[in-house]
Image (cartoon, rainbow, N blue to C red; front, top):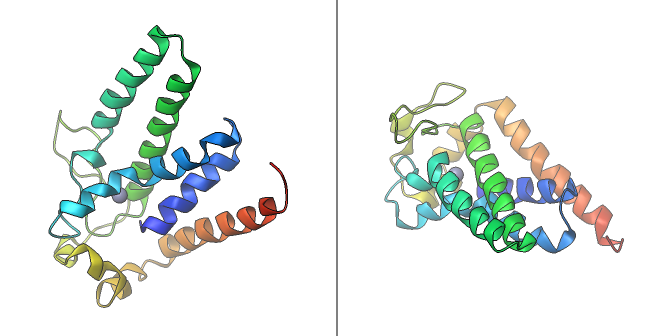
Length: 169
Ligand SMILES: [Zn+2]
């Protein structure tokens, strides 16, 4: 999934209004953060590091939440709950929309890569920035269902943003 779509997902999660609006920025960060491994990856197909596995977020967020619990600090607890939900929704949407690399749900127990539609890892042997140009982009939009879902997320987020831009909440 593209970064703008992850940002849109984060915004939509924020709009569910489970937590106060002060957490908006964290929702956006949490929905995108697994993709920072793209900064040090040589190719699209290699960019799924440990940050694209649930185990790392279970450890980080579990530890962080426990600190908040022991210190009786609701803000710390909420911070790590949002980080956990956002990062795992990222993994789930990457799993649904996988084109060249899936998600290792069971890592480190096993190394199996999971994806919904058949993937073509050979098409991911390109630098990350080449994702937005041909031939990758043409390959990416070949799956009309997934492309439609991704566009819908972006569209919904923009509509909601514009709707709430004129309101105080
Ligand atoms: Zn990702």
